[in-house]
Image 1: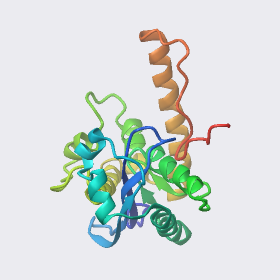
Image 2: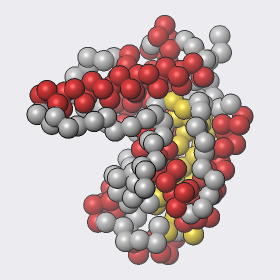
Image 3: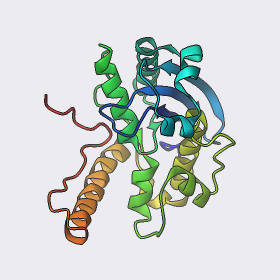
Length: 235
């Protein structure tokens, strides 16, 4: 029987920082893998974010301010192309995998607003292996970074960890590994899986918020927001 995992879009960003409201895109990947996890198409971008890239971020992805000044394209042009590439996949009904989707899709949303580009409105269907893994294997101990989770499911991350292309493709293959291992739990359409992840993410956020409030004494802690795009803060 065919399933949502047979053809997947894959999406990842490397950026200037962890704050989704201020981070700028440095590199991006949008590709497609087939049912065997083989890459059938890919697009890669290097953008000049027109701000200084912090040393900590450059140490992760390898792109310094000097390097992007030489190799990077105009940020607005790049953001428009990334949005367009994803829009094509969604219009075709291809699920798009993004590990920790609220980060990548929120950064892209804010960049689109920043550059006067029409953002993706309610991107769907999205597949987030982080949310799914937490839902179907809730009590597994240890970290759930892409590197750790890929290793757990026997997926090779490639030679360039924290390269947008390597990370995106690995996340897609992790999604397929999850579909195979938890077929009974994940045997649904892409649209159904998307809606299920909305609920799972909300439950996971509420559980984490309760932990912060009761165990760490952070009584004012509130969940970070919606999935797969965080709500735009009010001005």
